[in-house]
Length: 187
Image 1 (tube, rainbow, N blue to C red):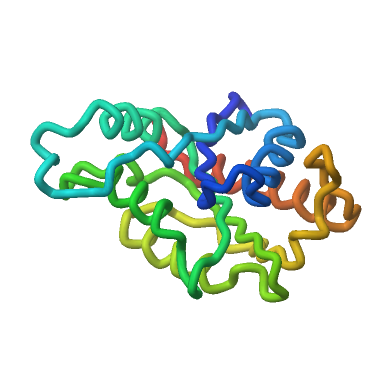
Image 2 (cartoon, rainbow, N blue to C red):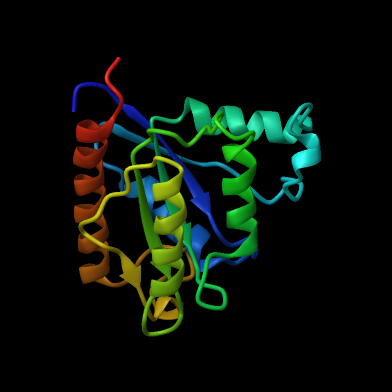
């Protein structure tokens, strides 16, 4: 990879002891050369309303700027009711509006869904992909990342205890780095 790429991570869980946040922090620690991963907070965003499109609150302007400044986007999310958590969907909506001025457009993306359940957040992963296709985000197709049994994945320091999961995530990040390189808008 020729230059370092800034990857904005969006964590779909606001819980203090969020397994998804632990995973995001683990990904930051294991990022390969050429990728700089940084969590972009979504919990302080107001609920999207078309009423503030003409003059958005400062938190919305700041958030949208963070998305625009990123070279790529990575979603780390749980599954709520077989879909994306509302807070994550709200963040996607906030940065996509007003229509025609989406901050997401053209940014290479990927998603990792993480769940204490056995199917690893498959529903959220697929719903998120559907939204991002509409927003012109080329989402990495392979490897897919559905990580189940997440409650057993971390030690008390938040480090991944399962060697095969750690190896898979390292390969995922390497693939994502290549995906970003191939799909970044040409300058």
